[in-house]
Amino acid sequence: MDKIKVIIAEDSDFVRDGMRIILGMDEEFEVIGCAANGLEAVSIAKENKADVILMDIQMPEMDGIEATKEIVSQNLGKVLILTTFDDYDLVKRAIHNGAKGYLIKNHKPEQLKQMIKSIHSGATVMEESILEKLTANETTASEGFQADNLTSRELDIIKAVAEGLSNKQIAERLFISEGTVKNYISTILEKENLSHRTALAVYYLTGKK
Image (cartoon, rainbow, N blue to C red):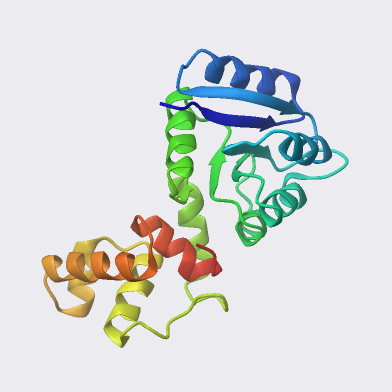
């Protein structure tokens, strides 16, 4: 099986080297470059085809949000944002620029590895605390969310998912069974070509898949 090729963009030598060592000890990953700022990250991504770029937000010369925009627009790899901040506006900007995931830095090594693998396989991943902040601040559909092929009931389900409700809570709100909710969600995910409910919530709130 091919290794997942990773670029690490992080201005802290300590954090950057730590992630490089963690991933380097796992045969599933190959760190093909490290950057101390956004400009370096974009340059390395242009020279080396990466699967996933780990991107810090707060960096000199070019921050992670702008670097993400450059990398995604040029199809240079999928971006997983790493930060000590859980600011709502930063989350929105990073996702708007095409980030596929968002992880607070106090993660465990196995959590980091799993998120990288999920993004590589095509999923959108987001730490639960960040998704909760998204849903707490906004539960109306983004302009980028396309509802043309969805029924009114499906839209009700999607909005409830974006609010963070469980299947049981959605069933109680809409006076339907949990099984029916589950079937609706499966149908919606298939229609929208999404892998799980977190990706559905992110799409509804940001307009980005």
